[in-house]
Image 1: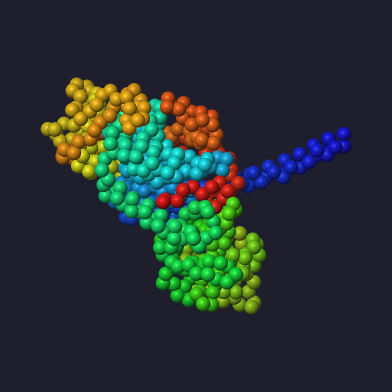
Image 2: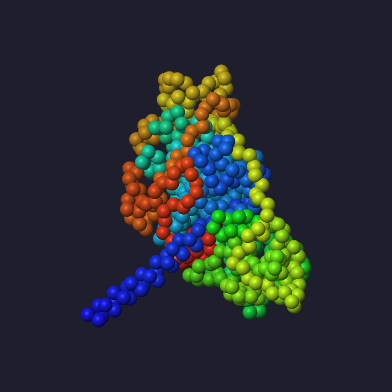
Length: 552
């Protein structure tokens, strides 16, 4: 009897101890991805209602390099391009006049769940999900899922959507049916005939495709050269930039350290950047240099009499979570003065910073000044984060991105003609030199380059309503987009599923036991999707959940 009572007491005690820790884990395991490259006009919105492109539905701000992106954010390009680096090793590349929504960035049993929505434009994606990860992109008419090392491109225009696989394989989910695509294949759906899909050979690469390929190759080369200096098998965003923009060297007692090219002995780590107010972590430093992601959110700083300030990748190792910091510095204050002390690898929470003897960097407004020597009469106190009122000034607001009217025909920049879908109300009028939306579907014969009905493409079974086309190389005049075509509503991504939770989707589209994760409301972007916390910090990329895939 005593043994039974003792056992019950131990169970109650364990529940009392474990339950608060789970709550803390849920609050601290937020996924954060990085805006790793900006070319030209790029803006973002933290939340929106219904349609982010509609005037007044979202508050748009100018995006900065190394901006942390969270679930619910929307990223848009004007006359420019952008690159997003995920902590799992995946990458997203946005062409001009493109709008991408980060619909779901969550965790489930240690796996990273990524569901994106391409609201307009063209974007390419490199993914290599680790075990338990899920990655999908929803266009206007379908959702593309990738479970292995894959590079694919999605176009979402007024008259339809298309996807082409450039490396690996992917599955296209629409109308509860999953269609497999291999390298070199494409699938197109026209808005006027959404029940019919066209599968054929992928169009030739254009300038955007070649830019994406070059970015992936350069990232892979730099990453392979940089990770040799860190004792960790896991991917962490930003390591490739360290090799490209700085040099590594060994420092006694601390192992390998890094320093940017061109930095002198008097260089200050926080002399080039800005502040961003994160909804969970508060004031977050954004390094304005291309390499300014990893050193400002991981590791610590060491002041060397020979080199000056150097960054040390402390915390990276085998099977250990890597802590993400809003800034790799300690907030201190005395009286009305507030400042920063670079975080040292040996610093302990709440204790006097090791580097305080090197001076305090005063923070006023949004500016970080040169270090101040500590007077003997001053007593600086450590603060968990910046005291209220320290950072003044808000973000730079921007107008909503324009809704650009384009068609699949006009968006095809390779000079390859595209075959219209049989029975579609979207037809090309040779007299007006544009696509028109006819009231009655045209009654035409099957084109000579069209095979119907197909039974297989490259050995793969197809849906009964799919058709196969062999693209022609006949040059054609580009179509003029019809301004009267209404914008198509964005689809809601299907629930995520992983191979570890049960059977994957069947060819008929039904979800197996591995499907889970409901849909968020399409109108709001705040709040997180239902997910359970992981044992590793996802932003670190170095947790026990695996490292995702390097772009090799």
